[in-house]
Length: 554
Length: 49
Image 1 (cartoon, chains in turn orange, brown):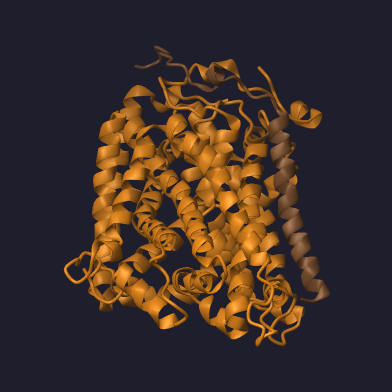
Image 2 (cartoon, rainbow over the protein chains, first blue to last red; image 1 turned 90 degrees about the horizontal axis):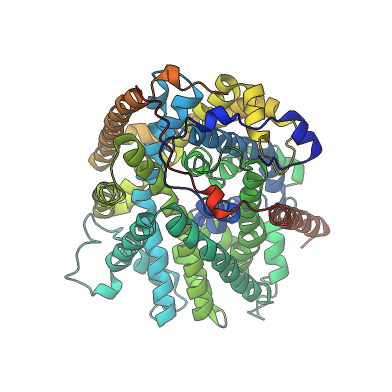
């Protein structure tokens, strides 16, 4: 049995006993190659946030000063949590489990454990319901740029009007109302195509579907980003009458230390910036979704996870900092100036779907660059959305014994109902915003906290470290285990507590005052109960097949 | 763009690019297990009660 890694790693880690392999149940799904799983995890992490949210937050909180708390959060929160998720996932996979309820059952031998894992089904599926809608906007915008129907001139209000009409922001149900407009101005064809693509890829399975797709989509995404980057970096000073709106000043707006008369120390003293930087790292690496554990569960028991996890995180950071950080804000600055960028970056949707299209139309080769940029966003969204379906598919297959066709059909129906709900209640994007807050923020923090506590305190430092080091391609310093056990949970709880304190009040009040918000929360509760029932059924099945006392670990 | 701005940009972009390249190099250096070794065999453990 080959053990990769440095001599130090080899000394500290023993290979998995052959006895454990005997517990592997019948299983057909597995990754075909190491680079395949790395690209799939990177693809899951790289999303719209890399190209829209990160530059917006960095510009909003003082440019270069933002990078210090950002990188600190990467090392204290992001990387340790990613290693923990990979390790728990592979550990669960070695015992034949691919869904988070099953993985938790193996990690924490408690009857309650699988039910904590229900969040690992609810979160990706509920996020998929609105993420696919945003993915459809990207595809639609890419198509419109490619066909030249996005040339709306230099008036910002025309872009805002188009976005509101396209997405249905003006009234509930308006996105479905085709009587007043043509199909070309409707998001529904793009949405249907995105749905079909996602489920076609998932239906093909892990190796021939997700892995194969990510193997070409991720390089294509980087190529698209490089094309846009070259265009942005050669913009110079497009308007000679506004020499201050130059590329150099645009880069300065993004990267200079101190901003708007603030010194770097004043910027660093802003606690909100530390909170936002930690939140950005947390969301960009897709930790706390339950997806990484699911993907890692398809590895072999002695496959490397230390280097693979680091590579996936690095790939995501490259897309975010080196590509996203050099494209969005500098491009916006040279056409809009400082005040325009400040206004645009207050909202990710505003920046991405109203401001940037206008900027692309203003620049030479803008139609082509706009099409490439939105296709890049579409690819980033698609590689993320397919990963959101896999955890639920895994439970339906391993927990309920359903075949691929039945699993895909059932999940397709559930997600179609949820997406239809969000698309219908589109006025002010209230349903989307409610889903994003309760699932895309609150539940993710909760699940991440559960995961890091399970890994650091239930699985324990010794067992956890051994799991990370087994087959490792790099030696992970043991310091990280102390970080995972003590620093990461504390960091997470502080960030979560402060964030909840600042934002939760208005969302709780809205439940009582806005029926759409109440309906959205009700829908999510129903979905949670549904996954709870599925998990209970799966647990009964697992207990019959593999009772606890027969699942002894290493 | 100030000198400190250039330094932050080059350090940040250089760090993530360097880390990515180093990781990919290390991954490529590792021998890849044959595909058939990755695929989980269908094993009946006869361990079910």
